[in-house]
Length: 237
Image 1 (spheres, rainbow, N blue to C red):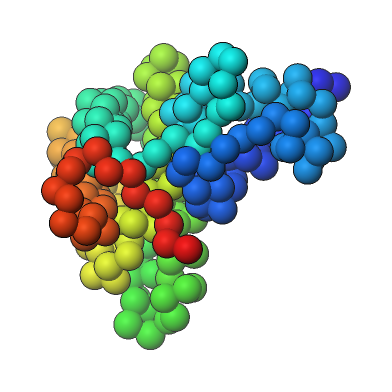
Image 2: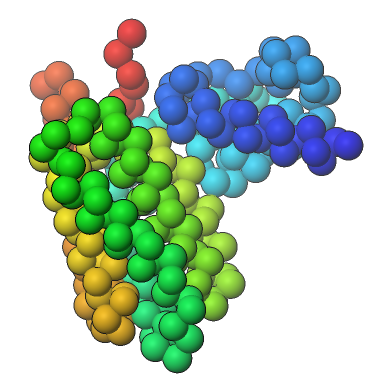
């Protein structure tokens, strides 16, 4: 029962952190959270510790936990780590897909739907485009995780997903970035489906590099003349 309640608390807190409803720096009182969700302190504490392992919460025993900050140094470190892990996973998936074509079926469907979004980029509302595109990018990432045979690698990649989700709004604040990101995902799918592991790894590395560049630009534009790379970026009131 406690484990099920802890999972529910974890899911709720994670969704609030990723959507920035719980902004960076927000205090996470076990007592208040327990009262809000109808849980005892034990499952709340378990959920907070799990989020801390994923880098979404800063937690030290004996202190009140708080939502982890978003800073340039943290973002850069996250993407440097992803650039090591995810191209390797894409390479493995592409190689395995040559011998086992059924592994690539999710990428075929995603490629078709990316084409459908590309066809309405200039006519659909931005809200509709963003919702559909976020769904597809999540499915792409989860398809790589599901198809990759290296369990330690995919477990590590999965642990970084929560941190990445908080940065999507910054990454696609520029409407032109959504178009470029869509094209990058199309090229990644094309490389995987054509059985070119080096191209798949290269295109994924390029996508991460461009995403990092966009996020850094978005963060630095919010820093008012300090020039510090350690400034925490928080949503405006």
